[in-house]
Length: 139
Image 1 (cartoon, one colour):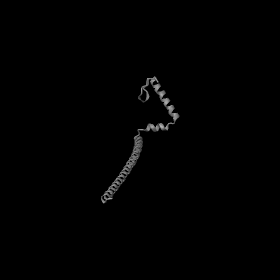
Image 2 (tube, rainbow, N blue to C red; image 1 turned 45 degrees about the horizontal axis):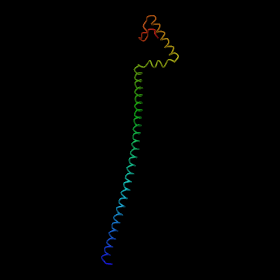
Image 3 (cartoon, rainbow, N blue to C red; image 1 turned 90 degrees about the vertical axis):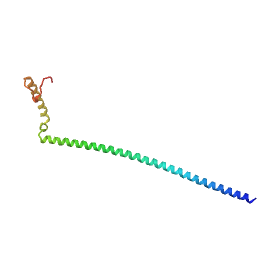
Image 4 (cartoon, helix red, strand yellow; image 1 turned 180 degrees about the horizontal axis):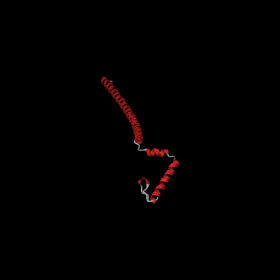
């Protein structure tokens, strides 16, 4: 064998080994890129799921806050109502309510019947009805 042929074979083997090494490195790099892409996709999915969960929790918290605000507003309105009733009592504008509370239920019914009889009698005799109402007897 000639020396030139041996050199050609050695060079060919070195070139083939170099190509195999380059191809192996490329395969390792591609595998690493695919793994990185899968990890990236998994991270995106996890973050989106966490975002959806937190968005749902935030909407629920906002709903509870609106409900609590409505309850607080109702309580404020009831407090204003009681304050206005207190003012009415202070000014003597709600004495009728207090008088009604003093009359027992049976007496209250009898008093209403007496008023109705008086009103009917007043119309029958030609006198004006109590409380400024005109009674025509159609009841």
